[in-house]
Length: 274
Image 1 (tube, rainbow, N blue to C red):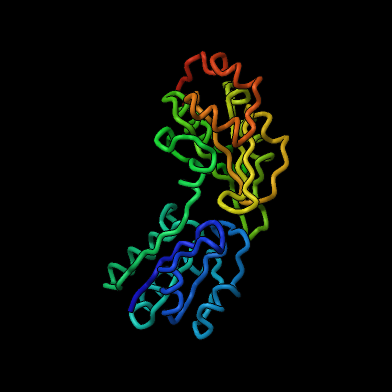
Image 2: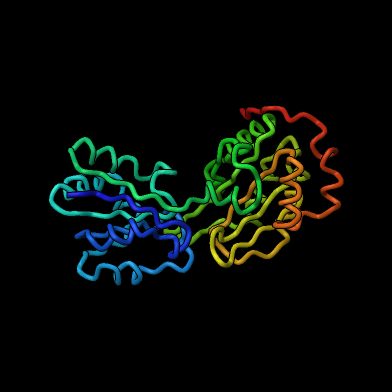
C-alpha cells in the first residue's frame, strides 16, 4: 500500500503525468481545500480521473490533530493520495502525516508540483539566488505580525529580496489582497523605509491570468489584479538585468528606475521589535 502526497501546482493544468497515473491507481483521494487556492480547479476534474475512488474534500480538522494517526493507519490497507496545492512539502502543513506514516512503516511517495517559490522568481525576472527568507503576512488581529517586518528588514540588510505570502483563511472566506497587504506592511514599518523601496505585486502566478506590477511598494496597491492567490515581493537593490526584467515584465516606471541609487543609498539595518 502507498500513501501519496501529490502537488497540484498552481493550476489544474500543472498536474504531471506521474501525478495523474498515481491518482488513477488509488482507493481514496483526499484534497486539501484550505491551504491555498488553485486556479480553474474543481473536484470533478479529479473524480473524472478515478471515478471509483472515495473522494474527501478535506478541511483543516481532516488533516490535523487526531486525523493524522487515522490516515497513517488507514494507509496500511488502502492506497491513498493526499492532493496539496503547489508542492506538497514546501510548507510544513502535512509533515506530521508523513512522519506518522513513515514511523508506521507505510510506503510514502511524493509527487512534486509547481510552487510559488520558483514561479515568483521565474515570472518576475528576479534572480532566485537573491531571495532571502520567505514570510507569510497574517492579519493583525490578536497581535501585530512584526516578525514579518523583521524578516524583510533583515533580508534588505543583506541585499536580498523577500517573497511575502498573504494570509488565506479559506474556511472563514477571508483572503488577503495585495492592497490590504501593502497597508498592513506600511503600518508595521516603524522605521518608515518600505514605502519607497521597489515592490512587485503578483497575482494568479503561473496561470493564463498571471498579472505582475512593479513600482515602489506604496504604489503597487493602486493597480488592478485579477484575484487570488496574490503575493508581494519586496525587492532589494536590483541587478541591472533585474531592472530590465521588472520594466519589461512588470512595467517598472522610468521615474523609479532613475531613483534606484537614491532609494537604496542608505544601508538597511536589522531590526528587532520588543
